Length: 342
Image 1 (cartoon, rainbow, N blue to C red):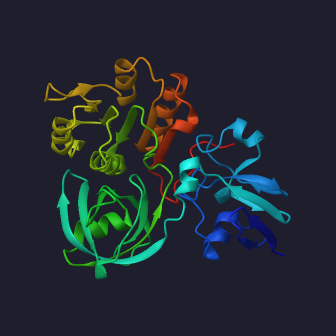
Image 2 (spheres, helix red, strand yellow):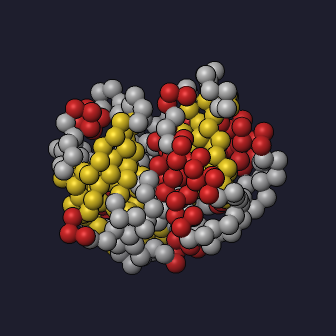
């Protein structure tokens, strides 16, 4: 027997026994905030108003013990056992700008460039000059070839005429193999979006710290480009971590932006001993706490490998940044195994 779930945005859905609230919402055409769909990222965090809901295992990075005591849930792990009511959580700035239309767009590949051994930069033009509105730091679902959809963050500014995506290729990955071996200039690609809550908060005029790893540089690049376009004056410190210097990319682009904007500082950090003596060696999170002693007034944007994002968030909280001022985008896929079990 299906259960009725009332959502704070005015929608009401039917959830079949054993299904999750998020699964049912998406199946019924509701644009419910979500990311990993596997209990790892926290993008679908909601508040239970009433009803009986059981959650399957999830990462404490996505929902901690205190939040659970406040009746917060993850819609992607929540199975209702009665009629329920829930409220989708958004911050104040999300509430004011939450009417971005989720669009399905036809695009074409206009550029594909290999920038490291396993990272490609892809640029898309949008067919029929259709407008795609998104916030700097958000992502979209991409349908490449006949592969299952994958999430990629926009690296371009919301004001740019083309969309830019950074794609990390992995051994055994369906999309990875297609990008490396088959994707051609002029090929059609479908995108759906925008999604994601780790976007730039324009009302915040205080200092910003951004920590990125791998292709987590993409949403940070979008945020920086847009910040410069709107004339933001606050200090921005970017820490970009990598295993080795061979895995770094877009360094010159950030260095050029730093020359234009004296408030922008860019620090690439590698774990292995670099040949380039300008590069810092160590963990990217160590570099952050070495440089910044007072985190008062900061907002943080984190993007990249899940473990890096999780460690960075924990460190920043211990240093005094409020959790509400940390906006994270851990690069999980919908099929990643949950690293921490309740």
